[in-house]
Image (cartoon, rainbow, N blue to C red; front, side, top):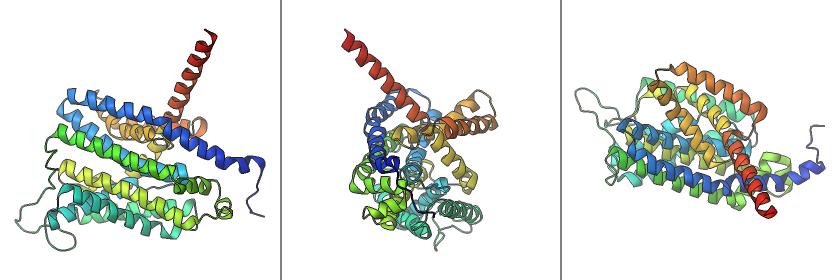
Length: 351
């Protein structure tokens, strides 16, 4: 009793899951590239406010992609997406103020350190799946919010916390030397997003990505195939943490300093919900999640609509995604374009 029951469907599932991973990833490449190119062309014609807003959207999309990888590829629910981004921002600020290293070096170190923290956070869940990891991440999000709300983010002081005292002037984290202006920084972030997506896709196409596909089906099935489940999960935690670290460093560089009020645990819950709504199986879904998280509320605000309306819309969209569209908006768009392509092929053959 309780053993995994192997049926014809379950035996065929690994190939089906891998095929879906290729379809939602490889087929989504043109859409993702088109999305990024459209932003690169259109955003420069917008005002400074919208340039900053779309920059924030791209930053959130990096963290959302880490949450999406855990959810779609391994079936793990991370409820600390925004908190991990905040941790990356804290590490980036502390490293920058303490060492004065170039932005790119701080970015890489932040990603590595945040990846290690994410790995440590996920250690208790290496042999388990489901509720335990969700609770661990939610508790981390709550604890992080309490700490940064009471202590604050590093601002150039000494000691572990890096806080200034007395009349000492607070320091801001400088942007990269090649991206000082708002528009230049937007393009800088755009390039980093493309690199993060490309790196993660290499991982998903590798043997490790195939192991994750098996683990999502069942731990017992993966183990029967010789996969070290704990080790594979650990690498997924590290990848998601590294992406969050990159996002946190970019966020800190964007505004110069961070505020603990931005990292309420409810924001992490909101990000996960938006990842589900947008579609966790593809990079387009991560970009859409960033759009819904940052740009959509800004559009409503510019129209004079209260932010509570956005929350209501997101709640209804989440219910719709869970009930009728498990692959989210991105999956529905991909199905639509695939249907149009098949229709065009059929018409072409008839001619």
